[in-house]
Length: 119
Image 1 (cartoon, rainbow, N blue to C red):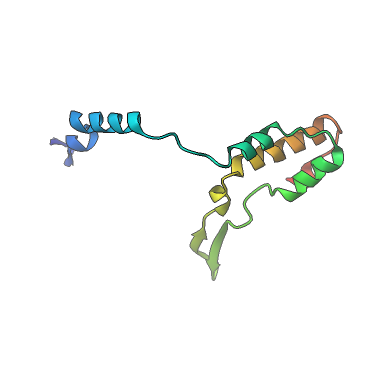
Image 2 (image 1 turned 135 degrees about the vertical axis):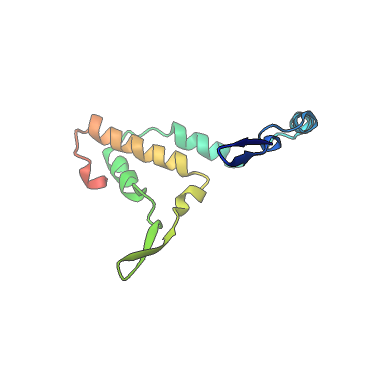
């Protein structure tokens, strides 16, 4: 234990014993590979090519720019609570956001369209 500026710092919190590190390393060595059932769908979404203006507009409209469930709960003008974004719980969230981004890029680069209405 160290004492600095009237605060005590416990070293075992920051530095664990060597035995624990060895046990963690052995668990990783013998761990089974994790089976990801959504990996084919993730790969398909990442490789999906947008080649049609109608499709790009549809994707940009259907995938929201921000999570529609995130809210601040207000009562008499004061914030009493916050509902966190539930979109992060979606296992395909990153792929869908990237797909929307590619659709918007297609509309700007290939079609020369103004995308302010989608933001």
